[in-house]
Image (cartoon, rainbow, N blue to C red):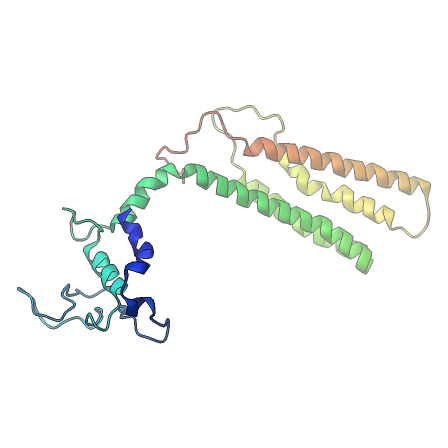
Length: 246
């Protein structure tokens, strides 16, 4: 909690720091953190001090804002609260974040599933959008097949690389049915080609409806398979220290 006081103590700063014009006035921020700095910002000599004051350290108290001095001291000390840790220990908020990371696996899983679903829906929607735009606007049927084929292959590769087989022998009701998503673009493309033919033919219209329903059924099974994939396993072993557990 003490590490959060940097942002919440703005109103407790001096008037000159509160009304400091950004980018125009010098805040006194140090240029680098590689040097060994002097903790006495008043410029007074301290016991055991060697050499001159570092050029990268914040300037004198009258020229340096209070938040720069506070942050500079915390970064140098490596901890918000003084402790018996070695001098090269990581800062306190780094250690706290490392300890909390093991409890963030739910958020990590949610983020990965969300990104996966976002990309798969985006690329599949591009396939159907390409069919409609190219056939209606350009009347270039072979171009529509070529563009949607490339996007469908990209979607199939994402499904292949991102989906990990379930652990613990979990029974799958629709195994490998996630590839029906990219394949559903093919009957949709054939049906659209029959729909935009020049001559009227009742047989072509019937075949068009057949391909339309085939695409709908494949898309429905694909959606059910994606739902089956994102459902969590009963036994989760992701927290164990093992290769590939990241």
